Amino acid sequence: MKIEDIRSKTDSELDFELAEARKKLFGLRMKASTESLAETASINSQRRSIARIITVLHEREHEIRGQESR
Image (cartoon, rainbow, N blue to C red):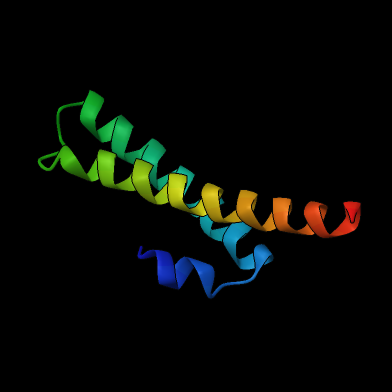
């Protein structure tokens, strides 16, 4: 998922996407452990997607806190 797509979504949509991405990562790890996963690079790309979502959520959280403290 591209960062532009992530930034255009609301926090509740991102929370849902994050949960789905974590479920998908779990499934990929299970497939890798049973040696039925052909493309192991998909695990890394899924981890990066999760990191992007978390980063955007944290950025939004800090922007709100920064405005409240002023």
